Length: 147
Image (cartoon, rainbow, N blue to C red):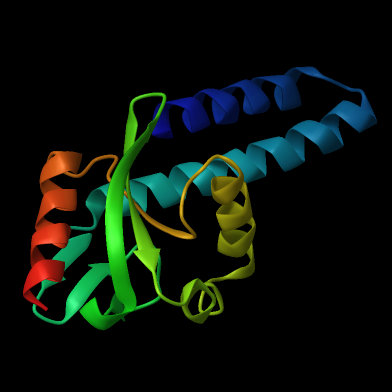
């Protein structure tokens, strides 16, 4: 994602430097700014060494979701789903709305799109995580049996 963003930034800068068309200048300026922000976000995420997903006695925490820890009592189950080789662990929650309400507006839109593709409202994106999705899912299911 970082590489793709950088390609758009470099391409946008090239077009901005070579065009005189006011409409293209505005479009490419907006595009370059957007992909520049995306690139900055990806760089920040790559540099952040904190654990992204924590599964412990209190529940499941994914810092990318920004909804806090989901306690074991709120989780009914989990399953693995992949989209174009990108792994996810979908969490079946007793009350999804409780957690959807904590999401930012852009994340709420993403949830609607994810649900249309067969995901649960709250799913753990395991891209870049050094763990097998099946192992993460099995750990969650194992912890559920013990709670």
